[in-house]
Amino acid sequence: MDSRKALQAVTLLSFIYIMLAPNRSSLYASGPSRWQDEELSSTIPATNVNSTGIVEETEDEYAYLILQYHKTGWLITKKIKSAVSSLTSIRRGGRVYLRTSRYNDSSDCPSARLRPHQLYIYSNPSLFCDATSLVDTLSAHARVKILHFVRNPFSLAVSNYLYHRQDPTPEEWVHDANPCAGLISSTFRNETSGYSIMSDNDFWTMGNICRSLFKTRPGLEDKGYYEHLLRLPPEEGLELATCHIVIASMIKMVNTIIKFEQVNRYYAENSVLEERLEILTISMDRLQKNPWQVGRRAFDFVLGPHTSEDVKDYLANRLNNDYRWRTRHGNSHVTSSDVAEKARLLSYLRGHQFWSRVLGNMELVTDSVT
Image (cartoon, rainbow, N blue to C red; front, side):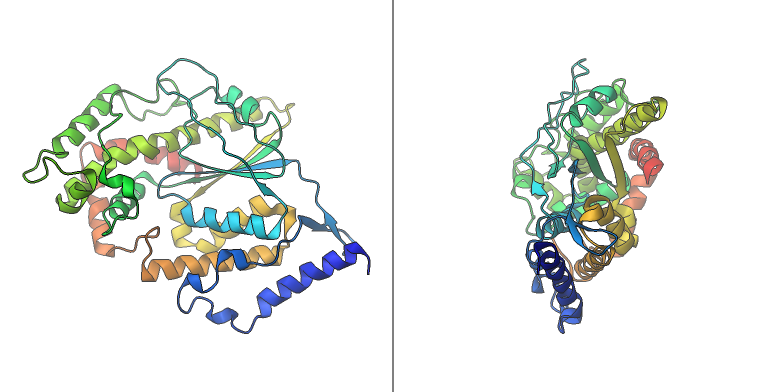
């Protein structure tokens, strides 16, 4: 048997084993830990199938970049990373630095050497730079597929509060963080592409809200951020956490959406240029409603010709089962608080004079791409 036929046989047998394993239906009986992501299959080189059914090595000109934010895309990113490492020869890329100061007038983007056939994952990108410069920087060494996970700002705010309020909290930094740091001036400057998001006065108002809640209540004068989340009334704890997440993630998420909108417009207006950035933006709110459909779309975008359609279907099924299980039974990253409490907190933000306007402005941006 020649090497091509041997590789084809290994690929086929691995998939048949996955699909027909007798205990496959009970893999999630005791939760997703029963089958770790690393057990997808033995490592298989990136492959494609030609018209004669022979498996061939795939020539890959793409770098792959996954962008996510706090409480936005953790589980699905984990699944994609596992599938890429287990089922393809795409390598994990090195650390990239995707931050630009939002307080200077430079149009330069941060240097990012994205190499072909490598996967990069970055959280909370800060791309406050010129869209044309962004295209040139990201695609300097490869065509790039960018998978961008976003979330509705209202649901993100509530999820962020409930996540960090857990006892014990999943993240140690919450104990010592200052949620009011950074609330000093407008971040968007001229980057809003026609959207009106936040003014300097809005940043000052948000700072005043934060400082009025942090270390001002009886018994909390010397306590940390986490103690405030536990002991403040839920509406006040939500407001304090929202002040923090707006700076830590939301304005960066909205800015990146706008930046990618500018990139797409740049390509549309310059049709003679090679489109070296392919961008897929996916809403985590849609993931909650249909994990299989959202997951299938993401797996297809990243894995492309490297795996078969049946394998992508199977990966989407695993994501769906895992997400449903975590939602039912609780998980530090997939919060499953009382539905009535979530609805009450969402209603509070939507009815609040300040938050309804600011988060509503951001919602217009997230809705435009989801």
